[in-house]
Amino acid sequence: MSTRPNLPPLRLHVPEPKYRPGDEADFGDIAIPAAGATPRPAVDAAPAAFHDLAYGLVRVLDDDGRAIGPWDPKLSPDTLRGILRAMAKTRAFDERMYRAQRQGKTSFYMKCTGEEAIACAQAYALHRDDMCFPSYRQQGLLIARDWPLIDMMNQIYSNKGDRLGGKQLPIMYSTREGSFFSISGNLATQLPQAVGWAMASAIKGDTRIASTWCGEGSTAEGDFHSACTFASVYRAPVILNVVNNQWAISSYSGFAGAEATTFAARAIGYGIAGLRVDGNDALAVYAATEWAAERARTNQGPTLIEFFTYRAEGHSTSDDPSAYRSAQEREKWPLGDPISRLKQHLIGLGEWDEERQAAMDLDVANEVKAAQKESEKNGILGHGMHQPMSTMFYDVFETLPWHLEEQKQDMLAEAKAAGIETS
Ligand SMILES: Cc1ncc(C[n+]2csc(CCOP(=O)(O)OP(=O)(O)O)c2C)c(N)n1
Image 1 (tube, helix red, strand yellow):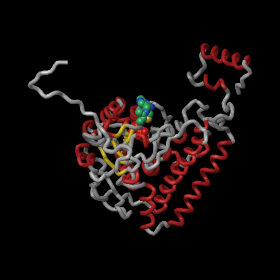
Image 2 (cartoon, protein in one colour):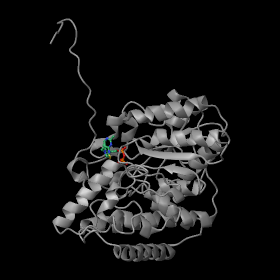
Image 3 (cartoon, helix red, strand yellow):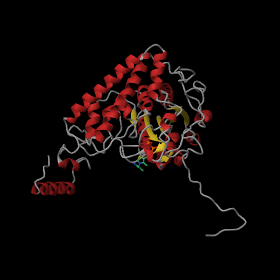
């Protein structure tokens, strides 16, 4: 160590979350602009016009659930009810699959509680064939697109109905027909892939755009930088969504850079349009996505949207958040719950009431329960083999090479000698 007595010693700054288990949480210092206060620029505005938006917060629903300001997407009551239902169904699905993991029927599950507005309202704002490159926390996209729940559950159970042949960790869905790109466990890899897909769409003169999602923690990956650079340089028709739910497992957002700036503000340096949006406000989520989609569809280039939200539950079934954050944070979160807020809005319009809400909740719970019953007929964890053992060798390459064929034969011979069932 070399020290000069006339200079102050250097100190490393290590970010520390404000609240730890047992602390009283208080989010009073988070700047929350009033609903309706943020301007809505034209979709062809130059990225330089987005400076304030990248540090502000687009909000439509006020504290009383009224929609106000230039970002109000003016959706029909039917569309609002559709989004509400998709969110409720996503929550019911999460509850049920979480319980299935606790019952030992599957090895793993991840909920998106508190973040339902992001995937569900976005699914409504995108076209059905726009290509989605999600992270593992956008199950709401499939649910809002009415993808069969039983198909999702088959994947979670790795059973004989699993279209992925039991090869993937539960919740890593892949449905080409649902325009839902294969989820990968490696964080942020989907970002440059989405940009490349969008570039290909533009090269071919196609009309479809791409949309991709990652958590704020994942923005620290190098792939985030590659994606932004390519998206900006080639004006790729892509929406880059950063879901800032404040936590990356036990690391708070400060470790990904939130102490110094916003995630939306990263857009400025890349010359990309950047919006920062209330992620628990389904109308703001819809409006921002519709705006960004319109921008992409008219060749104005990419948009980076930060959705400011809160991960209300544990990171996954393998996580216990009470070990690293204050249990009070969820109830103190200033942007509330996305489902309650949209429900309140619809009631205020005279288009909904508590009775209909209760009936809808019961209905979606029954729908999820019925799908679960059907899916479990295809098998659950611990109830024997659901896929032929040789499945593991297929699709490593398009055709099975000789050395994998040899391994497969060896495996089958050993299994037979040991009396193990192989299909
Ligand atoms: C490249 C890579 N590094 C680390 C991990 C382990 N890991 C899985 S999820 C996660 C946290 C991600 O947090 P964030 O991006 O904020 O998304 P969130 O889970 O909050 O939705 C980590 C570190 C991984 N899957 N891939």
